[in-house]
Image (cartoon, rainbow, N blue to C red; front, side):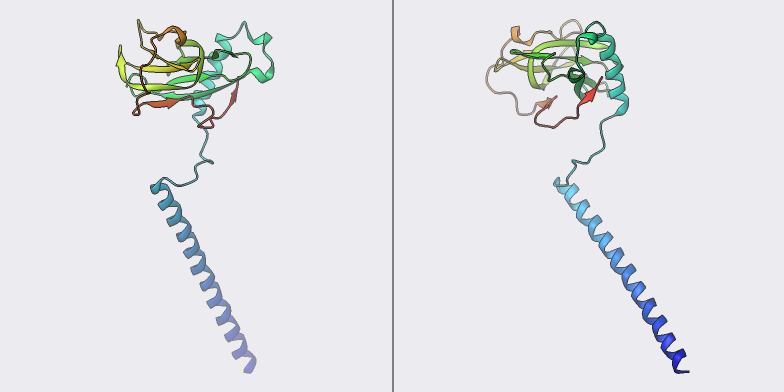
Length: 200
């Protein structure tokens, strides 16, 4: 009889410990979830592990670069065959255009680097040369596309859409007087935003 009582107490003790563990586990999960939610709302959450950019866009850009640079590919080393990109809706059509930039010696010189602006379908809006990143998208527009500000040679130049294209050499465009407008958006901020590098 004594052994039955001892076994009953042991089972009861084990059962109560299991319930306590489940309660503590639920409490810990709840605390973590609340902490993450509060940090996300406050803007202090660590998003460095955020999912990579749109794979569809990367493939589209990669395919287009292989076409655009077909003649140059044999001269490039593996280290030269990478790009960065940023997406921005330049004409408010609810479809992002793609800014594609490079940061290696093949595409960059003393005046800056080269790159492209592509439509959402991969077609070329523009190629550009001699620019430093980031590129600034302003709130003013010309021909339904936002005006852009490119830095080249330490000076800022404004580029406006004309006949469906932006000028390809920013250094010969009108210089920006004063500061870059605060309400502008930076794109292709290769150093500042730690953009991912993709091969092509």
